[in-house]
Length: 126
Image (tube, rainbow, N blue to C red; front, top):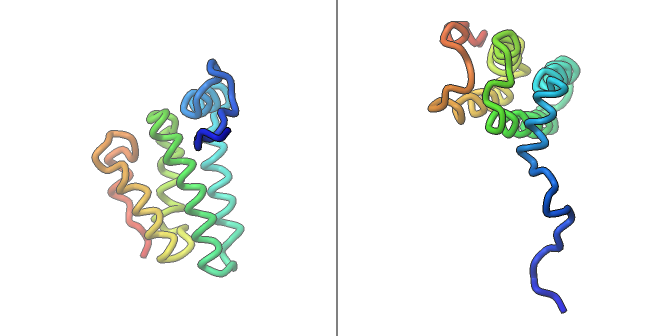
């Protein structure tokens, strides 16, 4: 007899997704790996059609957003600078991708999570 609820696929004492991400960030510097992959993605997709690459970029930014919500201090200043450069700076893929980068940063604008003040002064290279 169905109760209409999805079956539970993990034990009651299993770690939650935020706990898993926190572990990956602390133990393996997962944030640095995600930023490195994101930079590689951007470099490798300069000649690809805009629509597929924006969808793929958005997925990567959603993962990074979740990581930053779980572990707000997971990115060093150097990683912030690199992320800024590739999302909204001179190395951004194009205007659509730069818009995604701006949306990404805007979601954290009221939190003290991203971007030291000195990075905000960099031009966006438009």
